[in-house]
Length: 320
Image (cartoon, rainbow, N blue to C red):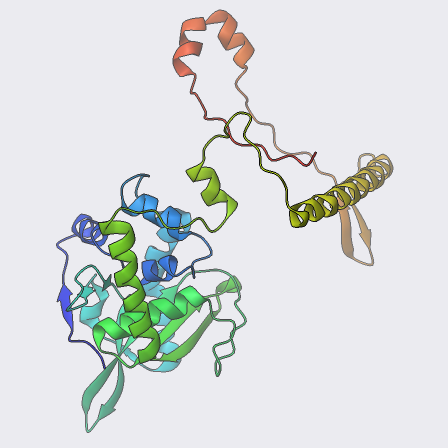
């Protein structure tokens, strides 16, 4: 069953960000469940607990904000379904029992009209991804798991039974897929989020590392003279790694020989072509300006020292 709908309308963007910082949103539930390929649960925990700076967005999220309206209009025109005007503002939907579970759908739309009256609503999520996921619209195979999870959470929080995800592909083509509400998935997602919030936010316990990037954040440096005795499995991995390293080196050396030969033959030409297809190019890049730190250090040592920024060392992995 759907839960009762609760919502909060932020005063402005800062208010929305402030409210969001106190909760786990739909896209964030996908992250803590390990469905987000761009962020691990541990990285999310670091941000949510203030141990690392809050994500302020990047060129992709900025583009997504500006393109959201265009994608929504594009989708509406393609499907003939009407966007609900009031849903264009940021509305935070809140779980009635667990106030830390929230979601802000991009849009809502009218599903159908009976006897001149619009009677049912759905969720619309807009993705300005500029790539071409190959999605089977019947089975949803190929749909990013994080998208599916986000849509399910939003449907559960709003009481909707249908959702569309629309995305802008390369070449500015629009694609979209309809998703039905999966009550079982939604309930399991909420249950998982409640346990995760209690364990890792309330109790301030870090989630387990899921990749080497997490490990490097947890253990920023090695312990001098500490080592483990390798198992048979690790020894076999070492042997295979040595073989792969050798084959990569041989391939790299062969590539260098080919590259040198092609450059010798290109001389002052910019490309080799074959039946109209470009095979190799060798073009001069635009000139660029580079700071000469040696001169700066010699002539203006105080300014040089003032501008120095200490960078933490990274752990370097070697195959011996």
